[in-house]
Image (cartoon, rainbow, N blue to C red; front, side, top):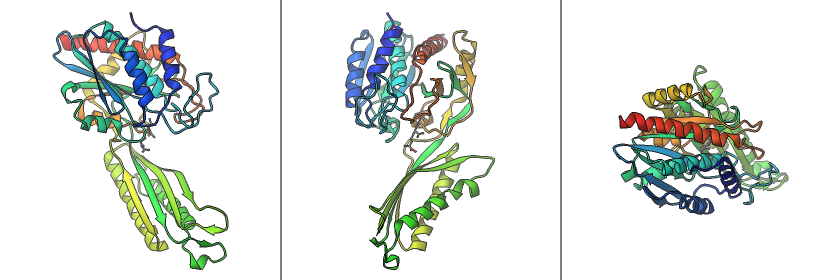
Length: 381
Ligand SMILES: CC(=O)N[C@@H](CCC[C@H](N)C(=O)O)C(=O)O
């Protein structure tokens, strides 16, 4: 018996109330393990990796392994949806919809635990998609090795698509990202004596402005790039010159070459600021596993063909997006497809008001159980 709509919605709401940030998903892991232990165990094996979980369904032939991945982490965002099942963890929210991702993965896993596939299936419940390259960590732990998928699938929810609609494209779906962390050290002092201090608010402000010229002056306008500096902290009060500043941000580019070019320009500009303002600029650029999400050509052609032909699935071809995903790392090792699942919300991913439409859950489970059943049949021939 597959999970009912009501059961799936209850699971999603349970998960929504316990968001945890990357590598701290202890409650989430315990909830998932407890639930998965209620599924048919006849051909299931479970392993844990840090706060992640790997579930293997042994196929009746076992000649091939199909992978399916969900991320499980939340964000350091204070929820303001006002929903009765809002986050119970202060300052934490599933503001990127990973509660929806997990619920759909559980629906698919539950279905195949009752309907044994011919191929093996490896389900990956992966921590730290937002902050610590969880996919790369998990891959490099070696624990996936004996259950390594031959091909792999995953989705991200999309507030801009109608609830339940599946979308993807051939080629690059998401950007590669790279975190920027710049720490500026000058000399603090009295507001009345600027000549005796070295003001890091002024140096930091110049750094922000100069970094914002990279996209307009260094990126080929026919291509694309983003430099967003989401955090700038400096100083303690209005009449004390700040001796330190911290600026954090992120780079986005659809090719690794462009990402590296932007990283190079960020480095050069930081060196220039250090020289100009006689301060120290300690720069950390962290790309980790956030490579561009490049869909495999033949797997994705097959995926798109299937979704277009399934009369119960609504499918649209989408443009590339500047969101990042560490599934890009797994796709650089294992051929597969990343796709969107529409959740129809006026608020964007990472918004404290994001409230995905739950009707998307059933649609996601249906589309993927249909697709993976078909894929299993193709592979078994
Ligand atoms: C889907 C999504 O929103 N992913 C995140 C990935 C973050 C990567 C990294 N921590 C960074 O900030 O560059 C995103 O912000 O796109």
